[in-house]
Length: 193
Ligand SMILES: Cc1cc2nc3c(=O)[nH]c(=O)nc-3n(C[C@H](O)[C@H](O)[C@H](O)COP(=O)(O)O)c2cc1C
Image (tube, rainbow, N blue to C red):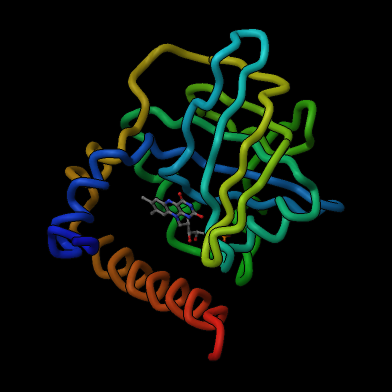
């Protein structure tokens, strides 16, 4: 008994059914602002007057450092055709360059960037976080929100089916680097190592 009844690829395919829509998750701390793509943001509440969301942030991302300091973030919901935003915010790190340098963003209650042209936003304050070793899972109160236009959100499956072929090598290389980085974080904290 115990262990997986399936191979890792099979499990990855089934858990892939749980991916959320792609959002630009932004944060800011002491004048520095940044944003990254996340596919792990979810609605996380029961009582309508206490709206909350959860999101998983990988520790090697620059956005993680900002959230850890500020304890705030915003979810920028994308329309189904906004694949360009995935490339702009999900393929490069704020460790290397300011991804918001040429973006005329707004701020609301928390100071986290609200991007132009998005479908809707949720401005959030962290109430609890859980350390997963390679990732941190945040539970956050929604303190402000607005919808700018109707339309379908950019789902993970739309992204997968429409990603331009010329973007794939960069995307795949980045994924491989992320898996290695996560593995290093998890192995680095195993007792006895
Ligand atoms: C489709 C897609 C989904 C992603 N989902 C997440 C996620 O849920 N959490 C996360 O921390 N990073 C996620 N990433 C990775 C970050 O967006 C990516 O590493 C980004 O470059 C980090 O930027 P930063 O270092 O400036 O924060 C995703 C990337 C893509 C392309």
